[in-house]
Image (cartoon, rainbow, N blue to C red):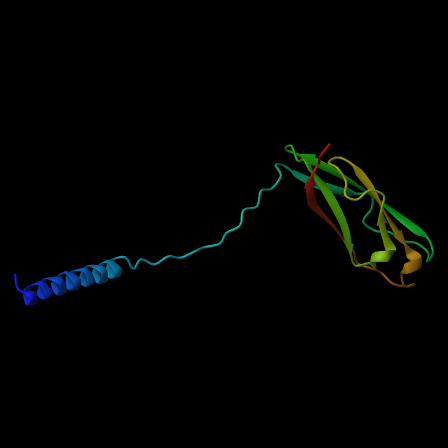
Length: 134
């Protein structure tokens, strides 16, 4: 076999390999997409809050109390965290917060921290907190 024949065979093999690699690259050009998602696991059942009153009145300097009782259903096993919108944070306190299922808390409003001759529209926010642990 001549030297030029060997060179042509080697060039042919190199060309065949290059073409094969190129085809493999074209065929293997799959697209990949990544998608993020979240998983939230809610406690079974539900809870409801019952307020001892929906309107409170008092004289500046008094402390007003509102009892919050929660009831649960369907095996609900999370603590319930309370917050109040519509009043200054330093004017409100809870006797227990968060509360366990079927536990009551007393919301105390310190009227000395509020303006006289003012009606405040407030919202009690009750949200699930961590599961109860013993």
